[in-house]
Length: 276
Ligand code: ADP
Ligand code: MG
Image 1 (cartoon, rainbow, N blue to C red):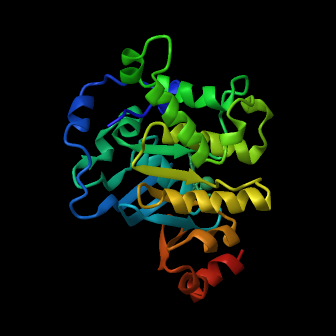
Image 2: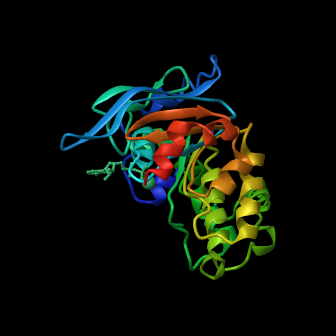
């Protein structure tokens, strides 16, 4: 299993922290098909509960959409999953065995959880190809095995990843010259270089054109299965295009969960959205 280095690219933390080796060796135990298990998670900020006994279960290979009004706790949930925020109470497991509440952010990234923030953070002065190369090189184990030249296998993997994120034609273009949507795809490509099992995407289509949004829907649909995805998004057309199961968060907990049409017709959900 490749390690995950997007966190390192962002300059956070120590990947050789104690316990890191122990995390990786058992791998991700998916014997119960569950890749993410949150139970009774509470996060308080000065007494205000951003998450209030949140319980969520995501199966391996799922594409889960999470919606909810502003302030519902969606970003805080992602912060808990990635170790950025420690819950005050509750359980958070990655697979059956990896207790996320005991790991640091870099350890969680290494264990196989990749996060895409809303704003793209690519290296503007490097080509799309080089961005993926940098994402890979930040991986210490890869860097150790590579000399000055990229092994052809690695180059193939970069080219394949560029194809996956619809940037095959733009391999040599400077990232700074890509459209907003292409930059988002490039950053997803950078995440994919770390081979994450679980991808968290916060408002991925915000600011995209209709065509880019459509292409992103295809991309996410194609990634599901081999990966598990949790997508937070306000664009309901996009959500209804990609969603299998939708979870609606409200006031830090799950208000409703199910297929998109059931959720959309749920009176409690309608009230929460229309009541604002
Ligand atoms: P969402 O992403 O669903 O819009 P957030 O998870 O960002 O919601 O926020 C949930 C609630 O927690 C909001 O009321 C927000 O103001 C509050 N909150 C989030 N982060 C902090 C923080 N670091 N300190 C204080 N309050 C916070
Ligand atoms: Mg948010």
